[in-house]
Length: 249
Image (cartoon, rainbow, N blue to C red; front, top):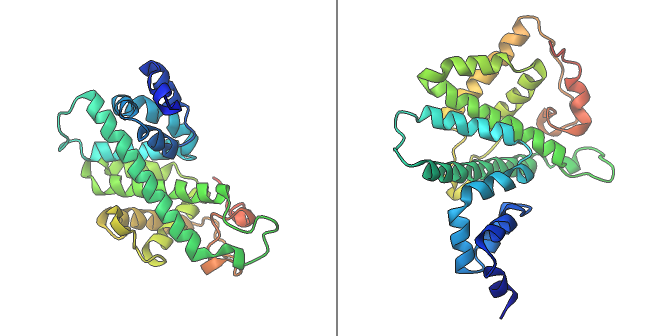
């Protein structure tokens, strides 16, 4: 008997715990494809497995879940009357889809920046996890603002969300919006994801207007450094000092 066959004879509760201890969802997927009984355990426990694995995978889980909440609230009037478990499965699948969109967008941004060719970054010249985390956080937030801005009953939530953003965070969101609207080819293959759809246009527009209003009201303006890719600077580790010039008040 193979090790996979022996493993599949364990009690389902133990196998589920193994799924829940996976480092990421690629491990979950590989394990689920090992044997039919493992696939069925994955199917029956998707919610608990996703909830256990997600914090290890998403550096911006709070923002990812906020986006999910707003997507669900925006669709509240058209949602089906599925049971709680089915809704949890749909939510888990959407969380993964949104994460793939964030990752694809980040790959596009990394490819555009070619930061390792722009200036000396020492022994770690390529895009760093901390920089990717900043970008993806802003990505989730602009998307969330767009969802709220397109749903009439959520307009007030969009305004309140922007009110709660510090000037430094608004600067990052504005740079993300600039990239989304003008500096990417919007080619995400079969994802069915469109940075130029009405949701993203709304999110980018609301962010840009709020950042412009802050500056017009006498907020701190800063000159972008001229040695970074396309004058982007809001997400790089070695240019955070420029954001520190913006008063967080």
